[in-house]
Image (cartoon, rainbow, N blue to C red; front, side):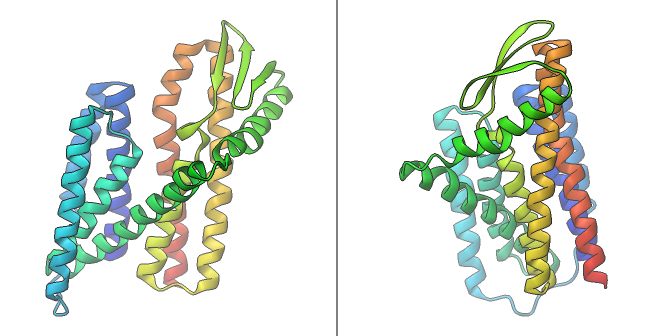
Length: 277
């Protein structure tokens, strides 16, 4: 039952991510439909019986989760900011901790899985974005330039699409229209990589995988996430070159969360097969 719920949760996460992206950047109608489908998927989660190991300490964790959720909501309303990936992961982490206050064993297992996943994302974000920036380590800029921009430009040249690098994270190309495109922040693919790593950590923690298997799956995840992002960015630039900026932004809005869902589904399938063996 847990494996089935994990797959349903993946679908819920994908629909929720897609819905928030569509509402903020694409079609509000499509976004609302995706969020409604996420609610429908939530209703499909099957819950088992109660857990006899439930203690008062679980309620303390639950109250911490409530505080995180309320703080995240207050911050977004007070700053009038758009709902982003960081907000989603923070909100999800708080909700995951809240499930620790319930006696239902299956619900708490799902909460533990999502807590590991969202916590892994937030820890990686704090280290590689916030801490490194505070220490004046330009990790994200270097990653964007050497591991995303340069490989993508090389592929575009192979495809006979002329592009010119004009700065660390920016290229210029002239197709149906002249445009400058910046690679940076979420477009680097690091956010999706963090989430996929979080899924691996959460799943392997729940199923008690051997350490060797965990390292192998983490390596596979990083490689697959990286290649998927190179494919995504290359496709975006090719679409922009042949069809213009409007078409490129349309693909940008929809393509990211769809690729994430497909890749995450494949990785969970591999994990499921490994756990069955």
